[in-house]
Length: 384
Image (cartoon, rainbow, N blue to C red; front, top):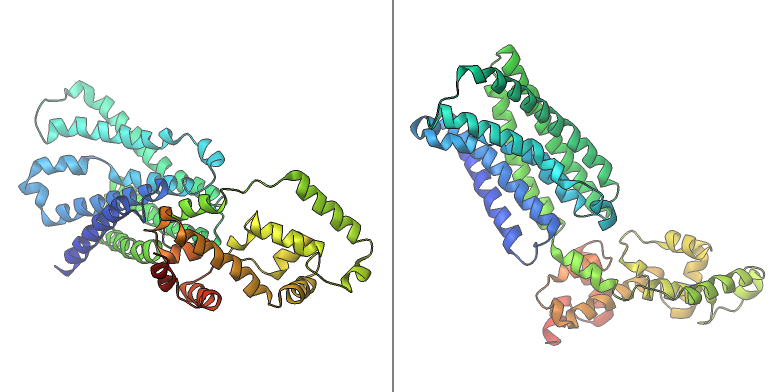
């Protein structure tokens, strides 16, 4: 009783989460659409398992048509599509996505064809054709092995194109958990098929593990890392005027090369005309390097070709502030622009902050209050 209750809760949660992702403006994006489909497919797999252990298929035989469709084949497919829709378009466009659906389509057609005979009794497959059916079912088994074993491995290869380190970590954990779950299911299924072993206890464990994926996806994927279309929209907002004059940038590089010939003499007088500071301003204003949540003095120093200590010296002397506050001011100003834009009036403030480069809600609110004297919510309400 408790076991099936847990499964039913997970099924309900998966359907609700999927609908929230599809319907809410906060989560409506191409990548999250496949995350919703993943939750739906997993919910249907669990629902079929509950129907099996509760004997529902015996009472209502026609429901076996739901079970006849191999929904489990869609789990690695939707996970893969979720990943590639979060990476660069150039990488995504090179993928032949339609190939992923071939095993699912093949298995569904074959199983429904057989079920129309065994379950619905609409027609009778002649005995002469059963040999062909057996061959087609062996091909079905081969496709199951291919899609379950190799598509997740290829997904690992695609993950390297993800740019956000936090998101990459979350997706790797999701993919690994899903891969292990499918691997255990496939091994258990094959053992039961070829060796006639009782696999009910193992399948129960797999089902419970699937419920944990539901709960974990709810917390990490939705609540903690905010997988929302805000990220894509804000990215576009930040990069609307990303093109930089190559002539201007080349001038900066040439000037810095000349400066390097007499560094000590130049460093004695640090002013706002300092060419390293000008290039830093260029990197912030036009390249938006502050949106990198892992940005630090060392990374900036590497971009400028100077030491981390000199980066601090320049910023302290010219702005009278430290490196962290200097970068956070750009992040706060970016959030302020988005708050003032009617296009983003219904968007999540925390997502704005995270996409502007802040690493957490605490650092975002603290920095915003320090710069503006108001919390983001207070600032938004006052700007209406």
